[in-house]
Length: 183
Length: 293
Image 1 (cartoon, each protein chain N blue to C red):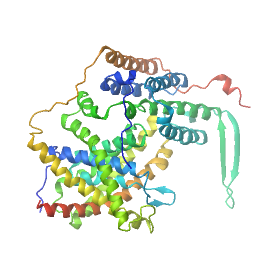
Image 2 (spheres, helix red, strand yellow):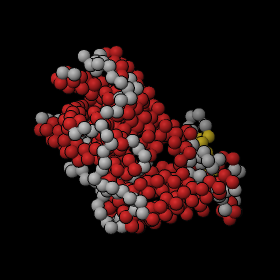
Image 3 (tube, helix red, strand yellow):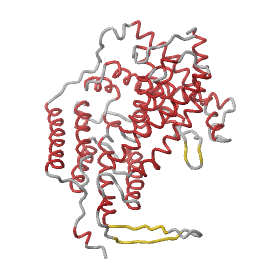
Image 4 (cartoon, each protein chain N blue to C red):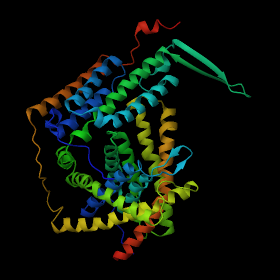
């Protein structure tokens, strides 16, 4: 059984996991150019969204934030889409907010822990993508309705759906990894 | 499928600048641009990233995909939005008396609700200003992936005051991307050899997403397991006891100070123009208004 962790610690392991999370987010964002994506109607969903959320839950809010922030930068750089700082911060928040429950995680397979993770995933997706979408208003002059309907709803939906389905799968898989390592 | 960074040495003026100076100046210009909606000022700001592009010695062939994305995003989405909806925060266009150039009303069948679309002088002016502003903002950081050495991101961000561990983590992320991309490719090939179909995902939305697990889970878990070895190697080398240095050293030169001074002057001037003199709001030329019937 895992010991409780300190929430804001950023030691050697957290440095490495943040780098791994960011690199994975970047690679999966880039890879969606080549693989089939799940879709609702004409809207494609990105599986990469689950990565910063999982890394936040597993390793803490700082790791979650860096996984999302740096990962989105890397994904955009790899795809040649430039640098969109408001979306980088939003993706960082999408990883940071689920990370706020990291200190309370003892057993990744526990049903209550997974349920709590799902709630934090929803909050992370809504707040993170909300920040990015609403920043379009002062930066680019979009009106509120366009920011909400055109950006917040699809991006938030993408993060929420991906997180709700993939994060528990990753948590269960990570629990198996921990048990094998005796932690 | 190999991942490669887009950077390669070009011996350009832009590359000779200190990357810290480039980032700082870009953010100063970003803060300046966001204060204006007047297209006359925005065109001046647009000239800066355009000049930066040409001074970077980049080619259209290298960057066309990215330009296409920016064009689609800015012109089609934003421009059309402005034309049809025509509202925006800073411009307060809805407070202006509209001068209609074209108008059409449709009625929804059965219920008879009217839907009116009009194109006004104000909407076109706002749309053009918005396009120029977005182009300026988008293209300001555009050249960075092509003109900044990925090996220097860590020392650059450390030099800008970001905590040492976070800067090192960013450096490590850049280093790990090609490795994890290779692992991703190997995993995909392995799963395809076992009958996993990559080209299509069938079933409902939940089933489709769960079918990504055979790719996502092995790649993520193997990366985390490999990360333990990296962390152990770093601990063995006393990482975190004292601050480490980078093999690359950055030194400011006169041109870097000049660049940052330029950005700062631009920001101060922009603030004075907009806040003190009240200029910079949406500009609609009188001759354009006169075109409206």
